[in-house]
Length: 227
Image (tube, rainbow, N blue to C red):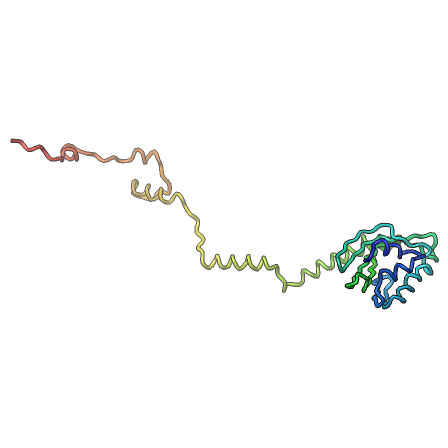
């Protein structure tokens, strides 16, 4: 079973090599990316890697870390501080990701160190300002401009929207509903012309039907039979 504290203790100018024998498999792969970059295999060579820390560093320690783990993998996100022998007055802080892969016996079969280069650049005066405030924004601008020249890629949602609009144009007649049309027709019946609007005063005062004497429907009812 790999212990987090055992891994933390290895990052020192005087590491306990017994912790390597305890946690690492005999044929373990050890690979470092960025700065420095190397690859070794076998527990004996891993011993030499950690022993070399005291040669180039006056001080090395992990000042902070976070980790996640499962039954076969473990990831440490560490913040380390180092002071080199040739720069004893200058300390550098940087970020390093440590990926640990375990075998069925619970020992480390692959060990990876990934150093964050930008965290190292932050320690360099003047250059860090030019990198983060000039170079990175300029590269971002160029990437956006380059993407604008690629007309071959279109958002899938945009394609679907355009297709639906074309389908709607072909099969659905767009017509504005005029709610005053029935009233216009009614006005035409009363005035004899299409006035375009209804004058409700004229509508109420329009010509009424005259029922003359003798033409009243009530006068046309059957008369009673006289004896």
